[in-house]
Image (cartoon, rainbow, N blue to C red; front, side, top):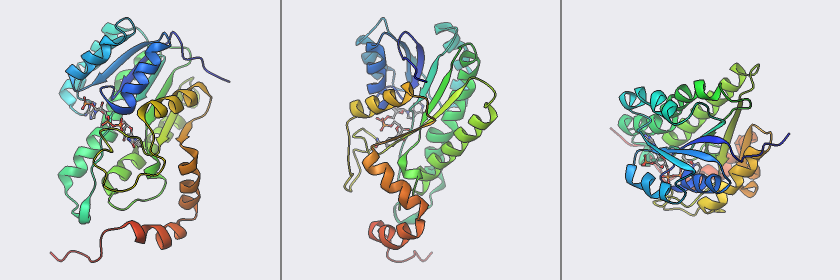
Length: 259
Ligand SMILES: NC(=O)c1ccc[n+]([C@@H]2O[C@H](COP(=O)([O-])OP(=O)(O)OC[C@H]3O[C@@H](n4cnc5c(N)ncnc54)[C@H](OP(=O)(O)O)[C@@H]3O)[C@@H](O)[C@H]2O)c1
């Protein structure tokens, strides 16, 4: 069963840059009505200028409970239903040298996990007004195997994965389709500081194309690129190989910190 994403009403979070922005541009070109949200108002205004009849903007910090309180009404002012939500908002910070800085973990979980719960809570009544609603969110292939330094980022994406599966189970008697999108490396603000080789790095436009193609299908998981997802899934299954051969090559820690 395939879905035609044309003349639909969608909400894309994390729309001011990277994958979310590329997805909004792509969807707007296909005659959809897209609500584009993120915190940076100016970046959203620039985005809206590219297709003013197809893009509406909504500036909001999805991890700020007070700002989120007003969001259901602000969304309802723009539309009476949502056919699809694609939650792209997120951040990445690494835990260098196993510092275990709780403030950093909270920042990452706020943007990657709690913001997603806020997104679904605000969207659910509007999704319920659509005949075939879709709720999709950006996880990461990093949650397939445990990467060194990714304790905060990978855990937040693993939490997101479980949350989506649980929502899928809970809504299995309803028309809601829940989709977990797991990209590999994409050249965006989020990865620009990475000081390691990123295999099969792709552009946000390529990522948006993969996402749209996957959303048009009927699946519940969209993994790309396959050249990365298949080996990682294999290593996730045979995790002894990962810990024996790959993790030791990637970790930068040679000794444990003493107080
Ligand atoms: N790039 C990759 O290689 C890669 C790989 C796997 C998964 N992903 C995931 O893909 C998603 C998009 O990332 P990206 O690579 O496109 O990075 P990006 O260019 O940094 O985009 C992140 C977006 O999230 C928004 N955002 C962050 N915190 C927010 C908050 N509290 N409230 C509302 N919006 C917030 C940012 O906008 P404002 O600053 O304007 O709020 C921005 O639009 C993320 O979930 C990321 O984890 C990325």
